[in-house]
Image (tube, rainbow, N blue to C red; front, side):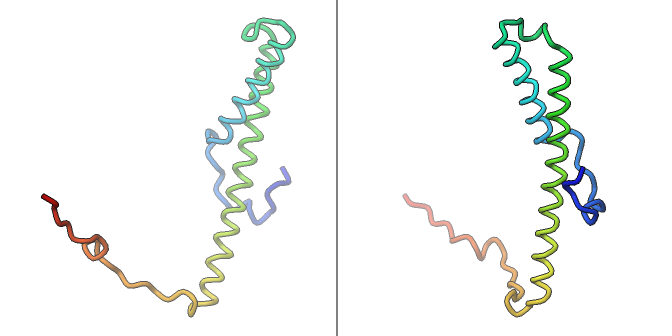
Length: 110
């Protein structure tokens, strides 16, 4: 598809089973069920080919949207890291603290 430009092709592909694919596949299947119910047909038994088709379309769209979201996030991360490299004065290194220095001392109340 055309959503991801050529520079995004070097990113690893998302998993075939991801949150967006499952969600949109379920939406496609539910829309086929709703269509059957509106037309007064048995929802699970009729139009199985339509159920499979809409589930597959939803799954594909979810996969492509996940690829696009990964590309946008990678692009933003790259731009942010480049900005941090170019402006080291604005981002001084932080001093390391132990957990005991961060937490207040425990004083039991009796």
